[in-house]
Length: 358
Image (cartoon, rainbow, N blue to C red; front, side):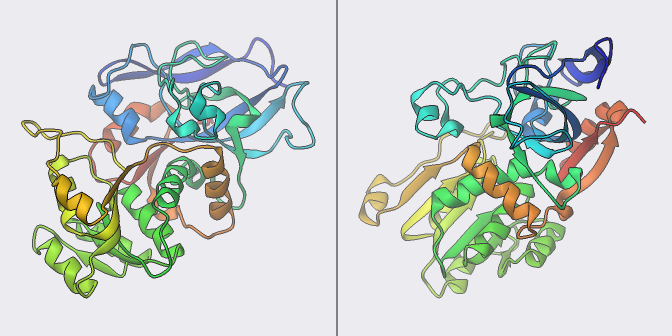
């Protein structure tokens, strides 16, 4: 057992590009809570934008929500038929309130009171808390995983969001699917779309990324800086265009292309949050008459729910989806600032912080 006098380390944002490790009191499992030793936390673009000041939060703030860990203590009221010390878990769904209409109808990803600034039990400051050595959790936030490294498992959280996206789109066998952008989220869309039986086209200017997308199953690749995307989509689909178009980029100018590539009765899925370039308008002009005439659907998707987490953990644990290519670099907790600097360069899929004092 851990001693009551023990402390733990947590990485705290105190301002833009100002993050450092601090010692705080170590919490202990009690009641319906378990204590999770954080093994790894991957640095999502959301935390990267906190680091650079794009996402506004109240400081001090503890970020981190792509988390893998190990249960080290179990409270007396926890169902010990299901949960034990030593279980390997990913942490998720810490932000939904659990009480609103959407949470009660199993749509926690759209919680009316979703709050990145909530303060979790056992942590000294508000925030999602994954950049800490330990987290005190209820088991409804935990999902077991097997057979993969903690670094890979930390990417189960973003995969769960892509599971939600792909299932929202309801890809059918033989559908033509276009994935715009081949960062990590685009790459994960490629893998899942292929496993749904789709023919997958990707649009990306970076050749290294399109090469990886091909290895992960993409059937066709387009470099929109060198080729006309719409014309290539028409060619590859024999004039049909795509039943599902996923935009995984944050730029409204790119989103315009999505609507030129969608088939009649097709769907455009807005996966990424939208962050216009300087001087660019957030709004995208759409021909409402055209959308009406050809039954075009626009779907927004963000976050994930417990069902998505369960499915994501299962397909990773059983080797259906390979996350190894997306662990671009690992850093020790003491190098957390260096990890963020590497992440914001924009050349990585995921930079992972390992929590290990040794």
